[in-house]
Length: 182
Image 1 (tube, helix red, strand yellow):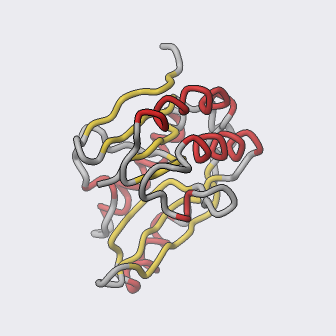
Image 2 (cartoon, helix red, strand yellow; image 1 turned 90 degrees about the horizontal axis):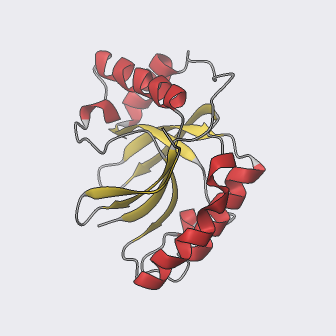
């Protein structure tokens, strides 16, 4: 299973993404709104690994110093795929990469660089910051999904992030590494 470190956007950005999730469902398309788990929320994955040792976990404390400045400003749509045996695609919103966001991701990726099973796509210089809208779309459904969510304009004032969480896919649990007060 996957281990990850995720930046959680402001409540304004979260609501904006959830509106798009709902619009996809209303159009009869795949959406992360279909995932009803209480830990399902819009996020930007900063690092991923198959397993993480205690040293890598400890290095995260220093790596996270920049998180409050890493504003999540969403931009245009991006499609990843087709992927896997069934040739399905992922639809996401790109995150406009500010210097503070890139610096945060670089520090988090460096903290986990020796963890087991780190994909090349989360290594510094190869990372594509995004927030996922839908997974498992057929290539034919991608055009429909883009037509549904393509009308949303970027937010003018996205606001500061809510915090940073750790996700343990083996235990199916989350915990906060850093969080805004209140």
